[in-house]
Image (cartoon, rainbow, N blue to C red; front, top):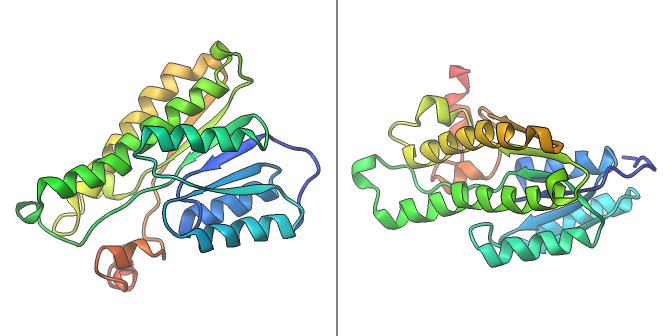
Length: 216
């Protein structure tokens, strides 16, 4: 892939080492963004994304951090700014746990899922707004929240906690879009359907895509 010469600013993509996040990071680099590739544990995967971008002439950095941690989020954005002003955020990081019914889900699991999937995007969006909003002296930008079709379907018998967290992301998208529309920031959400990524293995069914694909 070849990189354009004009810079479009810096993009922060959470969960950028694998799956949708990695694909987003690579495409954004092609489109002229410097990319901050956030990851939680898999440093090797994130470093591979950065290496691919740099090999094609782009600029990128891998930054470890837990989006559910306010301290980590601040550090992620500080490191991203070293590449240049932050002009875009893709709230992609998300988790799910083993497939289960609601009557099998403990409070500790709910806390983990909601911390990453809801609190994380709120914290990252807050930091992005503080840097991009014309109200704060920024030059504007864009935020994309990665939701899921599970928000519409509910994921019964599998992970309704994950589905509910993505419903919260849909609401965040609507509210924040209206809140900062006149401050130079566009906020959109996308709801991927069935995508072949590692997240299905995390739910205990690596072959889930093949099982449910006929429902598309």
